[in-house]
Length: 108
Image (cartoon, rainbow, N blue to C red):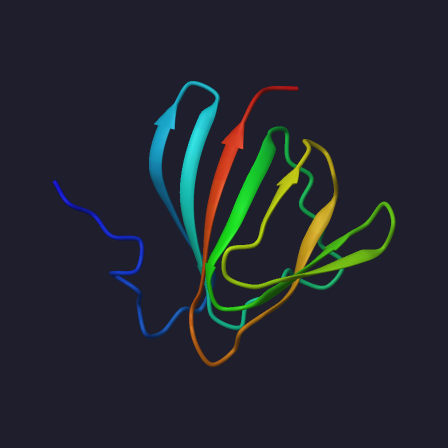
């Protein structure tokens, strides 16, 4: 079966869209679609697994709590986020979908 990461993009997204593409044991690949979405005020992701993420389309800005550092991302940029590294999505492109590919792996 043929699949494409750039298809099935809803025109109206009240919340970010998370789609699991592959899952096996402690390994999960997911597509995330944002359309102007950000993390709620005061919310920080604090995940039990490591996350490697690449931006495929759009633009985004991540912020990390430990050093209050902001990271601008454009298509092709990737980052590895170690487990329990608090981070948030500060901004995504409001006028087009932002498409991420995230790989969650490992246990803590």
